[in-house]
Amino acid sequence: MIDISNIHKTYITGSNKLHVLKGIDLKVEAGEMISVMGASGSGKSTLLNILGILDNHDHGEYLLSGIRIENLNERKAARLRNKYLGFVFQSFNLVSFKNAAENVALPLYYQNVKRKKRNAIAMEYLDRMGLKEWAHHLPNELSGGQKQRVAIARALIGKPKVILADEPTGALDSVTSQEVMDILTDINKNENITMLIVTHELDIAKRTQKTIRITDGLITEIIKN
Amino acid sequence: MFSLDRWQEIYLTIRKNKLRTFLTGFAVAWGIFMLIILLGSGNGLENGVKEQFKGGAMNGIWISSGVTSVQYKGLKTGREIKFTDQDYKLIKNSIKGYDHISARLFLGSVLVSYKNEYGTFFVSPSHPDYGYIKEVQILQGRFLNQIDIRECRKVAAIGEKVKSQLFKGRDTVALEKYINIKGVPFKIIGIFRDFGRDDNEQKRIYIPITTAQKVFYTSNVINQISFTTGDASPAEADAMLRKAKLTLSRSHTFSPDDPRAIDIMNKSEDVKRFNALFAGIRMFIWIIGIGTIIAGIVGVSNIMMISVKERTKEIGIRKALGATPGSIIGLVMQEAILITGFAGYVGLVLGVGLLELITKNIPPSDFFRNPEANFAIAVGATILLIIAGAFAGFFPAIKAAAIRPIEALREE
Ligand SMILES: Nc1ncnc2c1ncn2[C@@H]1O[C@H](COP(=O)(O)OP(=O)(O)OP(=O)(O)O)[C@@H](O)[C@H]1O
Ligand SMILES: [Mg+2]
Image (cartoon, rainbow over all chains, first blue to last red; front, top):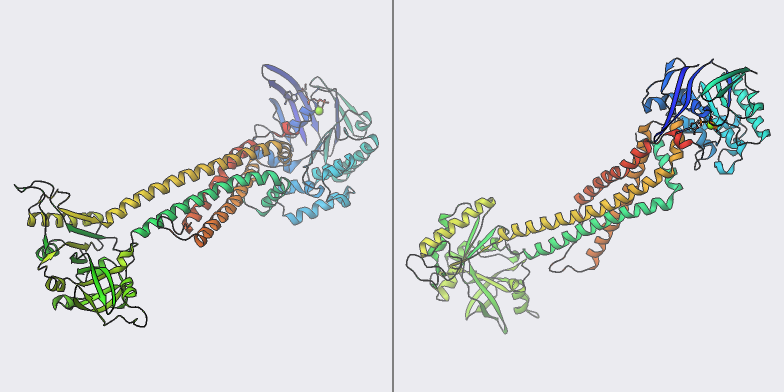
């Protein structure tokens, strides 16, 4: 599903150059659930952004579901994100003035699904997250766990092939974190969606099939859990 | 591009930012309101002045005799030019393209009586065509005709005011009655209305010029020759006037360049001058109005810029979820067009409403009447608004489309 080799990324700020990724090779099979660990600043988010086509890599090769990701224009990148990828962030990133259902339905808006149909599907996904009663609440009326479940529903609704989660439990307490992981493993199992989860917590990483450790811009360890 | 969904998206964001939207819209509404008021006032001024031109054909030319002021062919200045029937015939035969022509004699204001009622009125001996040249409206009876001229009939067409002044009380039927002009009885054959602004135009009495020459012993003298130029072009009308001048200068031996020998009133010239003036005023108004609207647009653009900055994160999320740059541009531009369009429309309606109110409640004066904003102005303003909205949204939209999701979504 994901096949990257020798990925390099350098950030240039003013006269400073920061070589963050120094040749990453990684193969992720369809349906795999992988966690990424590493010290702060080691380049985990950078890698995830490149995999999510939110950022470009400077060097190397990236194949997503067999499609070569290189020098895409923004329009194509947006289409690919919409079709293949779902995102879950540490800070949820819900649109504050849209209610839960509207947030969940947003990816379908960009797939030109009609409003009525969109809302019906969004309700379905919210129901699966146990949030049917909260469909018409704004994000600031929801708890952290609820917000993340809304975000997961939003990531799922476009039927992506891959879900990229950057510290999805980083802002949640341990009980809620486990609940969110329950949902994610369920989805992985039942819908065969490939998952990459960046985390700092070992017990979260332990719940995935494989843990990849990044140190100083390189993969230094792959552990089977 | 203009899907219902997009409108719903925009409606949602506008509803979330009511005050901001209102303030933005206000600037645009004010701009359009001012433009409409200015254009309406310009029209009011124009209508007022046009009113001054009424009472006399727009293509009329009046030539009166004067006194020479330039030495010519050994003749000294200060010579009085006297037109005669001969000049009338000469001009009638020499110019081509006129549709009405008349000679006129000036008798000045004259004491006129009917039974025991008296009044002084301007008695104007003329040809029947003068009714057309002056564009009088016949209310009763008829104007002068050729038979009156040929047979030197003692008949008179009188103005409304003449009638109301001489026929009072129970004696209100004026037609066929005889009035006394300088001791000579004339039968009233018609009553007319003149559209001239001057009250005196209503106090005229027209009688056949041949009759006047006979009964008031002026022999073949006339004071003025006037004609209308039909549907001649301005250049052709000019040529007709030049020909008439040349004819008169030859028959009376005065310099064709003498400005005083004959006195010319050329209505189409005046109208042309005023049209040019009002074209200038109108342009001036559009420039001011568009300036005001541009100020509004810059306001909208600025606020949209701020709005885009505030919405950086939202736009980043949209992009991560699959929004193309085109759809983001559309979203911002459409919002700008919607705000400018709606606010501008409100300004338009208020402006037209105020003009309407002014027209209804302020009596028309000599220089101001019916300040209207016509359909063309409204259509023009609407098109202007849409273009303005697109302009206002353009730069913020480009800025929004350039937002990079990784930067928008990065945690602080
Ligand atoms: N847009 C950017 N411009 C410049 N430097 C950047 C940019 N994004 C990240 N960096 C730098 O690159 C390095 C890697 O950042 P990254 O966000 O990938 O780390 P991370 O492994 O996700 O860390 P954390 O666990 O704290 O989230 C950091 O030193 C960071 O300062
Ligand atoms: Mg990170």
